[in-house]
Amino acid sequence: MQIEAVIFDLDGVITSTDEYHYLAWKKLFDRLGIEFCRKDNQKLRGIGRRESFELITGNKFSRNWVETYLKEKNEFYLEFLDRNMLSPLPGITKFLRQLDSAGIRKAIASGSRNAIHILEKLGMTKHFEVQVDGSMCTVGKPAPDLFLLAARKLHIPSFKCIVVEDSQAGIDAAAAARMKSIGIGNHLKNADICLENTQALDIAIIL
Image 1: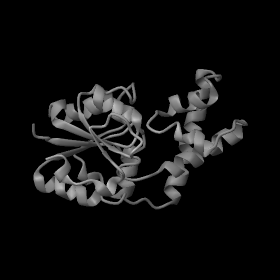
Image 2: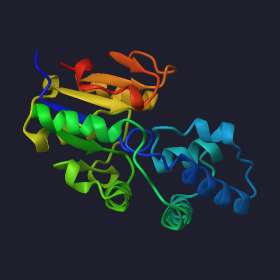
Image 3: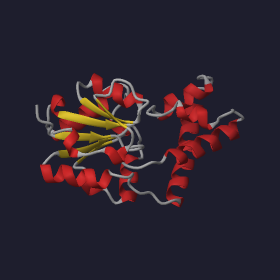
């Protein structure tokens, strides 16, 4: 079976903004008097903004306050993002060129509502004909909705797509969408292909 499309997660796959997410959460939780460290931040990989907040706080705030705090966190994140440079992770540019040469189509499917802004900051919007972000689906990963929407927009059946992900939630979402997966990081379980880092990405893996 020939793969016709590669669907990429964004953060941790195309580029890394983990540090800015951590700093933004840390700034918010410090203000709220809630302990938060880098170990806590690791638990939030691949999880949506609201789910992340509730995981750390124990769901003890009213819905209105949660919305206020999530907006505040995003403002902190965008401030850190805009103050710093972003670049593609090692191996990504080469892999995208290989896919273009083979006629394999490409999409972004990220739970981040800032995904398109980040692509623009990277100057990489042109590389992905379909861009799906967290504002386009009501349910995030590990539900398959983001990946299924990307496949529909590409007009390609799910079983002809392969997902590149760095989070367990993303690998689980790919499986739920009945898509093959490439996991970035040896800690991931049940990925069809597991690579140590993005530098190991090569088109020979999927042909």
